[in-house]
Length: 93
Image (cartoon, rainbow, N blue to C red; front, side):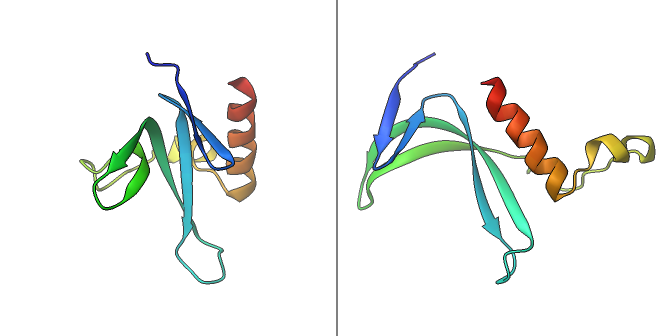
């Protein structure tokens, strides 16, 4: 795997690493949408200048997602649980 690290202003991205893009559904910024991305490369795009190219990791082929009742407590995360889970994940890398 390519271990290259590319600079984008103050940010640096490592090829193959996972990153997140957070947007919000509402103007109050209370309903986040988290996209999970794998960084591929820094590239010149026609008419766009230099871009960071990602694979979006999603489940588009499975529009419905279910969680069994017995799994809800440990799989479905509220805001604080999400933050805690992400922090633990970041410190592992």
